[in-house]
Amino acid sequence: MSKADALTPAEINRVLNTCQIMQHSEGKRCALVLSHAAMRVTEIALLRTEHILFANGKIKEEIHLPASICKMLKPRTVWLTNKTSREIIQQWIDHRLVKKWGVSGRADFQGLIPESRFLYTVRGAPYSLQPKPRKLDSGEIREYWACDALEQAMREIYKKCGLPLASSHSGRKSLCTNAVVKGVPIETVSRILGHASPETTIDYVVIQPRRVEEMCGIDWV
Image (tube, rainbow, N blue to C red; front, side, top):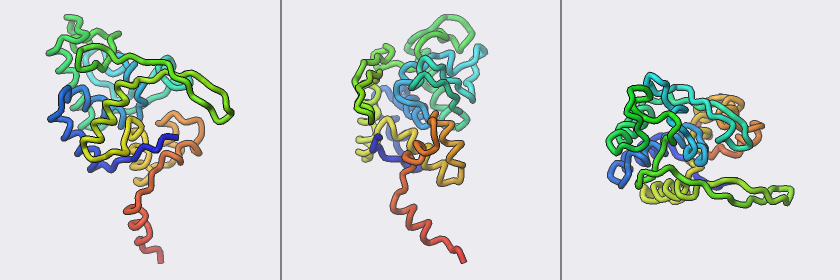
């Protein structure tokens, strides 16, 4: 289980603002908001333009992730309803058009090739994945695909923002923790994250000391 830290809404906004002074800021900010919408780093790397946009160019609110890009080949849906996230995604689309990365010259899909990868590196190329071994609890070794370049890029962003414990997994942990704190049922959060059991989701909740203090200070009599 990843030990990545969960971020508060204020910390998320600080990271997004700090990104604006970094190289390839549009791509980095887009990757971050997709991460905080509960997408895994490999899903972000494999995401296609047609997954994000309707043919008429509108950004979708419900993103249906196909089994082919999801962990354990389990398709699921994530939501892009946050206003700031949608604005950042549109800024990335505009940046792609300026750079002419995966453009079609047509009017549909805002002029982007629908089958093209949605996110690109600073060099204008899609992110690549590499096979890696993973040891399961049973002792079995199983191969999985990882996007080290994007994972490392996110880790560096957080480190520059004074959050050394944060990583590409922090987006999912932050969404889970902040949702639970607001009273969203753990079963609902589990479904969004694509977990087979709410018990797995509970491990994603990061209870920070200041929140424990707030809980202990609640009047209950």
